Image: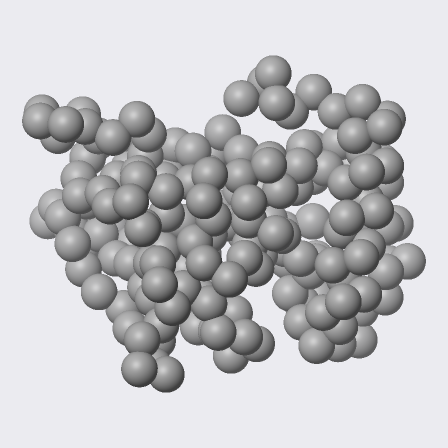
Length: 186
């Protein structure tokens, strides 16, 4: 991913312009947060800008979702459907290695790690769904508790019938409509 993540000054300016427009267009996602406070956290933070750049490149449409009491800002992938550039992945590298027939090219956890983000957990996913409907045609892997993962499973979510569902599947499974949403803490 390094060839896609070396940001020039021009890349940074373009990214910040995109993020600013998205921020302004979706104020309901981050009530009480100002663009100036976001910019102050991002301007000299190459690590965060690189992660946001890759989130954008993979069609995640990252945006500020909220400000934590600690002052940290949370960016989530806010694309209507699971990000196109992160689909057809199994859950983690153990699942990738275990899949002998027709393995996917990547795993969600490894890809997220390389991007510098984390998968949304169930609580974060439900919070995003309270803000706006997403994953009505796709699904997204979420952080899976260790006890479930140790038994070979993994969790994913979607929205159907105006309800957010949490499902399970074998961690080695992958589908063209299942990807993952990332969370970046800045």
